Length: 153
Image (cartoon, rainbow, N blue to C red; front, side, top):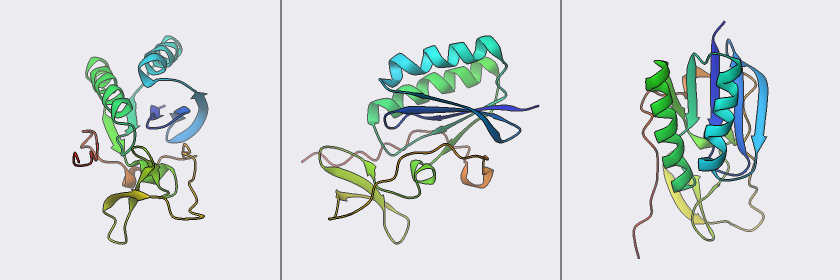
């Protein structure tokens, strides 16, 4: 049975899903900094079971969280010799705007390009959600962080 670790750490709370053959079997939700939470939770999971694959949300979102998650999970995938995949944050929140800097948010425009702007009146922001089943068509092998850093002004 293939066990997959699925991590959404670009916003609070951090969500970690454990999947058996692509089906969500356990959810862990924790408030706090990725640097404090992620290693502790993953260590607890590894004490109980073997991980066969890692998927994480590579952005856009919190720059520091993305960087920490990437370095930690890439190192873990190399150490455990398991596949490491990424998925866009928009695929885990129903294409809703994602918090960027200050009052700005990332959003997908009509061409599916990531842009940054302020929220419009009555615009809805969805929470991030672990999928009930992994859709591998949304995952990609290029796991580098999608920082989407704005120009300095």
